[in-house]
Amino acid sequence: MNDARGDLLDVLELQSPQDVVRLRQATRDRAIAAGLSLVDQTKIITAASELGRNTLIYGGGGRVVMSVIARDGRRGVRLEFVDEGPGIPDLEKALTDGFTTGGGLGLGLGGARRLSDEFEVVSEVGRGTRVTIVRWRAR
Amino acid sequence: MDRIPILRMGRYLLVSIQVDMHDQLAMALQDDLTNRIVADKANGVLIDISSLDVVDSFIGRMIGNIAAMSRVLDANTVVVGMRPAVAITLVELGLDLEGVRTALNVERGMALLREGS
Figure 1: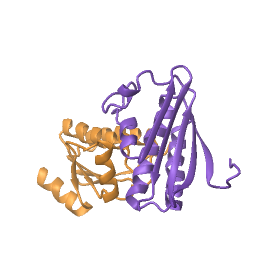
Figure 2: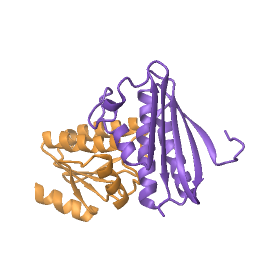
Figure 3: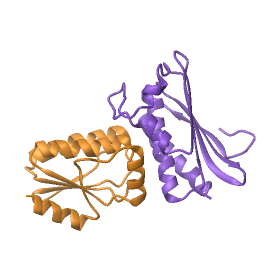
Figure 4: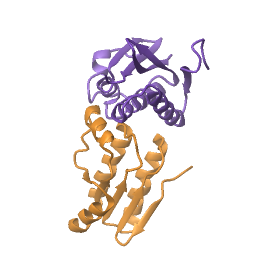
């Protein structure tokens, strides 16, 4: 699915564990297109994997909007994870390492924040969650 | 369902992960390895992750679980071939793989297993 900006913006559905594998591959393609270093590619792909799994497990599935963006002559990768799940009642708690309601390690959200240059969560209980991350190409 | 192959070499089990694993595949590997340690009376497990360009918290947890389960079953686990970018990312993610022995390559990993038994 593309918008007027052409092939730089895509939507990927996240409904199965295989979709998370697709998400990692699609993120890598965009990270390479944005000129990210190998370490920065690895960081954004890992962050995407954590957030994609969250969307799947906690959000009950959703989608990710992926784009290669430019600001001040610098390129980057922007990923927006959207679900219509139960939402996060206590964001601060959810961002704390080791806190989990799903039996994982509780590193997903906080870890993704550390691996990103920009990080934003908007969540409404009963309505859903939107997590946006950006990783810029290093100057 | 797909499975990651487990090879036996003497008293050791060798696994080389060559594909980007989805979570169920990682869980299946964890179960298969645990069963094979007992069935094959193995006392060492070597896991080569040199083909993996990403290790997230789920795969990291699986590696930690395999190491813990093999320890309980009287076997050692060595993880070899982690890429530098993966190591940097894992630490930043907050996973230090405590209790998991690592080596730079298969040769050094096998030497570690032989020492340990």
